[in-house]
Length: 221
Image 1 (cartoon, rainbow, N blue to C red):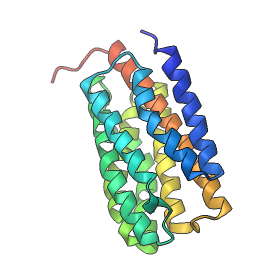
Image 2: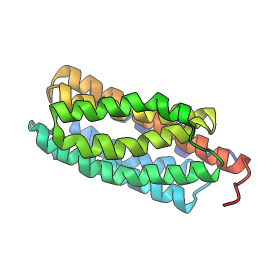
Image 3: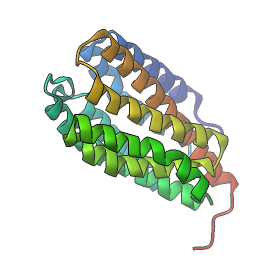
Image 4: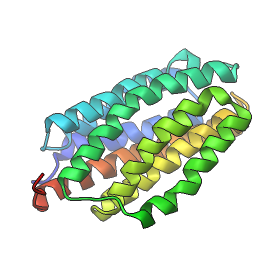
């Protein structure tokens, strides 16, 4: 069953708006556009399983947290604590993707895990050196996100690309937090790259996971 075209177009428009708002940057535009992303993504897909609803609800809560005033604090420690709260919400998002991918027949492999290990270890090392308050997000949530990418690699090509873009998006978030000055021009452009990769990742994962779930037989477990 094809995705609903109008909500999909609205999602893509909101995604583009969120990228522009981050690049400007405009907190007012971000507060207007970003909360609409996950509801529009859910509306664009006809397969509204309980897992998908729960996962995108977690993503929506994470979006709300990460666009709060603490995300723009000049204090890296405050921003790290805000990231930790947002990561807790996004963990629900990743756990839902894990369940959907496993249900569709995707399985982790040592090769796919090994390819992603350097990025996770690098993120943990960067957080440990530059902002230890970000370690729970880098290590805990980062591992869950890596598992999404690992499983997605064994699913459809859309899901695989989405999983990889999600990892890249969160690597950019960690890079902003630990290496860039809040409010600088490069910080705003990196934030725009975060939103571009994040919105594309969610779009591709939802499309890839739901289509794969429909087309592949469920494993017997």
